[in-house]
Image (tube, rainbow over all chains, first blue to last red; front, side, top):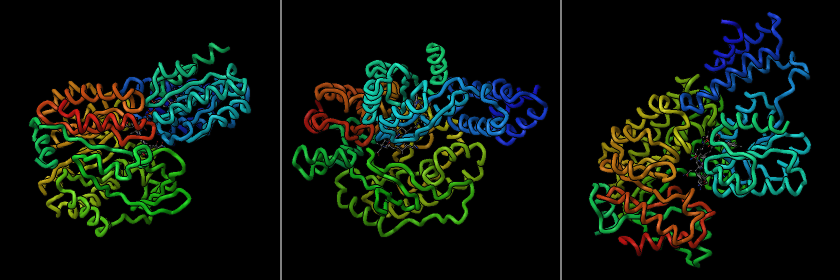
Length: 213
Length: 335
Ligand code: B12
């Protein structure tokens, strides 16, 4: 097995120490950091994302794989020069104001990172202004909003409005999700996309940025 | 028949003259109803068939922070809901360090039991919320706990064993009271679709401990109820095997309620069923009533149903819909 395949396999098993070790080895062997990322770590995360979507693995397996991915990228970071590390795109993500559920939001963030996005995590209980400000200051391509409560879903409509009022609605794609959110709701409030799970959210994000380019 | 006798009849899977019900409200929604109706005893006047007391207790640390009896500090802030998020985890690493597990506060538990005894014309439930997985994550964080099921399984087994030990001591005290009918365990395992931890982990870590807790309660001749939000459909065969009497929430947006009634309804009593996700916040009062009658028709055949919202009603439910809920429960029951 090539070292990159091995990295992918170990990542899928969530072996963060071994992933980090093998990334160091791969660097020592002269493999470019971007190749290790694109052909080792990311495909591993893809497999886990796919299996999660199919219900073959569950949140714990995704969490340990994402943690291993992080350990690997930490090793690679100093070797990735700017042009190589140009991310697929940049996004900010948060759980909306009044809502404190963060497990799903964190999974979406991890999957997005796994697909090569640069992710700014705004945490929980995030007011619309903060989404707008971050998207503007950080030039985000995508804004991801998570809500798990019917009482906080309306905040998502406020967020779409806040982007309109700030005059930057056309500059970003807004994605929404969380247990009670539906396709119809997303359409009703004028969001760009909804997906039921984190792996399809990452696929959708890729689609959205390639449409935009 | 007393309210308690009607619930007992429903639990023995016999048709009842009325469907027993429980009005379950979050603190904020209750306050809203009190303001709306001008009745400070709005909850008491609901005449629910069930009386509940919660084991959890909190010390107010001020500034929106509360400490529970396990030393977990919760940040309630200005958010919607009753408990907020954890501010400080007492066991952040997979290592107990100098953490000491609490002993049940016997005096406080007996006070709560006395309150239930005073209402024993109703079916009395002593609730141990955050009873297993949730207690583990309140101490050790959601993500660390989920990961440690896989990477530090011994630690997780030990952590859960300590929690069971605590619960069983609480049960020992509560079950001294003949007037208390049921121990109600709360623990959220479900997400909108499927289990957060997945079935294999549930089967290895949670199920054997439910058996210990349920058997302990049953050894006193009491009923066992279990609450879990979300989709636990794959657990029903295990619930039957474990001898569970009552399953709570039963979200109709998650379950095919007819199928579950037909398949498990002779063993398990469903407690909940009126959606706080799709029905109560959004429908008109007439639609709420129609939806309630539909759920009641399906679930109350041969008893085995306690009418209730799928969750303590949150603050986005219009007062008119709470009133519609009560009208059906009180006056259109049977229709
Ligand atoms: C765990 C949990 C909690 C924990 C949260 C811990 C934490 N750190 O997050 C605690 C106990 C603190 C909690 C508190 C409350 N909760 Co809660 N909670 C849940 C539960 C059981 C699971 C949520 C979860 O973690 N799921 C696992 C993750 C992986 O799934 P997920 O979040 O859905 O995310 C996936 C997708 O939705 C999607 N996704 C998520 N975000 C995004 C974003 C984008 C952009 C996209 C594309 C996709 C996407 O991808 C994710 C991964 O695949 C749900 C049940 C349910 N049906 O979901 C109730 C639930 C959400 N809670 C509920 C309630 C009512 C509450 C409280 C109000 C209870 C109370 N009385 O205090 C409080 C509110 C606190 C607050 N202000 O937020 C209700 C909401 C009902 C309603 N009407 O809206 C639910 C639905 C349960 C029910 N009975 O109906 N809760």
